[in-house]
Length: 86
Length: 269
Ligand SMILES: Nc1ncnc2c1ncn2[C@@H]1O[C@H](COP(=O)(O)OP(=O)(O)OP(=O)(O)O)[C@@H](O)[C@H]1O
Ligand SMILES: [Mg+2]
Image (tube, rainbow over all chains, first blue to last red):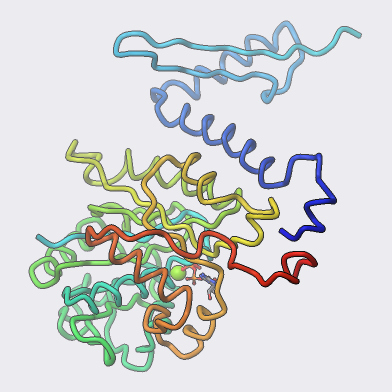
């Protein structure tokens, strides 16, 4: 980086910072699915369908995450972004 | 004990073949008897990078099918002693590789070689699976770029669940990060993920950083693995990586910007 660049001081985060943040999210997601039991994708799909009976949502508005906290405790975390009230 | 090392990535075109050729040559230069095996069935390229394309008679699939024996298929490198190439076939379909067949050939190679380097094809299909299945060590070749890093993480998932070591509950495959086509200048301006960023995301030990280098194209043009070009930054960086692979401690080079002159520093380049 040259001194001129330095004085042009960028306030916005660089694209590398954006790349890193996006990757951290996607990789955490991939790892969550990797460690999940075999029935997990089917269960996730069914949960989404149940919610759809009541509220119209896209599948990317639901995040289902399984966290293995320790040996005999896992937490199923369900996050649903509901559409705004009309 | 022979070591099987897969050079893998998920994403295509990140430098697996360049790295396989360089690392195999580097190991042989250190006196280790080494064979580099092309798993990219149908898209053979390693022979070109190694400069032995005109000497291919039989290939990996011929050996698996019993149409040739290993001694007929192995090509002895002309430049470097202790170094051999097992080329991929150019025409057969990908199903030519079976676990049973690949396992048999690798077992036979293990009798004779210290290092067996497997140049994986891109993707996560049969060819890539076969290349990593028997591995003791995986060199996860990654570019500092979002799709390559994501694909590397997927490959790590495969290594941890689909490899022989995972299936048999043995000690896990040793995973090492090789960051290639790195440009310290672009990292400094915030346009490129840094070594530290990629290390943090993938969370595996760093084997080496290979800079983006004009020497790589020159090397592939001439069919001479870039590690032979010890004047070049990439050649030196591969030598360092090979040294680390064999247990030496070597400091990382080519990860920060070159020192520029005073005027350049003020006005940029
Ligand atoms: N450090 C580097 N600097 C500049 N160019 C490079 C570098 N490493 C690799 N390349 C170039 O990138 C291209 C792809 O390299 P290579 O064939 O080794 O990748 P690959 O991962 O084996 O590809 P494929 O997935 O198709 O098998 C080539 O043109 C090569 O010259
Ligand atoms: Mg290749």
